[in-house]
Amino acid sequence: TNRTFTMLKPDAVEKGHIGAILDKISASGFKVVALKLTHMTTADAKAFYAIHSERPFYGELVEYMTRGPIVAAVLEKDNAVEDFRTLIGATNPADAAEGTIRKLYAASIGENAVHGSDSDENAAIESAFHFAGREMF
Ligand code: GTP
Ligand code: MG
Image (cartoon, rainbow, N blue to C red; front, side):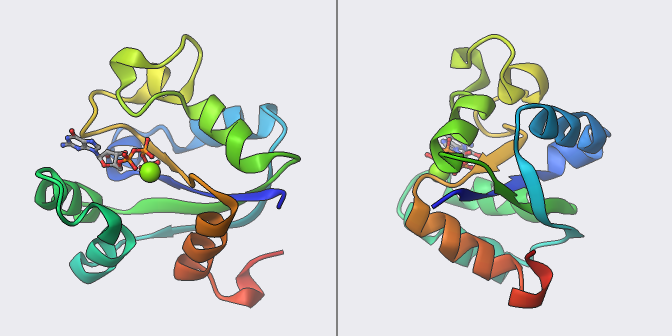
């Protein structure tokens, strides 16, 4: 499809980067079709990242994602999933290309500022996790 899901993670919100990151997303051709500030519960974060439940960093990831509010958004663009992953850069900001959101705003692999869905199927699942149908336009 032409939609993806993103979160501006607690570190990005804490550092005051909401505006700058949304501006870069818009300037890169993505249309915001859903948007909110929200705070994931521990149960929310465990469920959202269930695929990583056996990984050694799972507990740290859940702590991080629940320590403060996030911005959740659904974005529309041709080839949205792949193009957004390109825009955010590698998981580890040390490996992220110049000009990518993680290169600009992420501190480490554990605190990497932004999420991007990895497939059309997961974009739909993750959007529905955070938004009711009437909140997506
Ligand atoms: P997302 O867009 O957030 O899904 O990131 P990704 O697809 O680039 O990476 P992946 O799905 O493999 O990992 C999900 C998240 O777990 C990452 O974005 C990091 O926040 C966290 N993470 C991944 N690897 C590590 C790690 O080695 N240590 C820690 N502390 N966190 C990690
Ligand atoms: Mg991922």
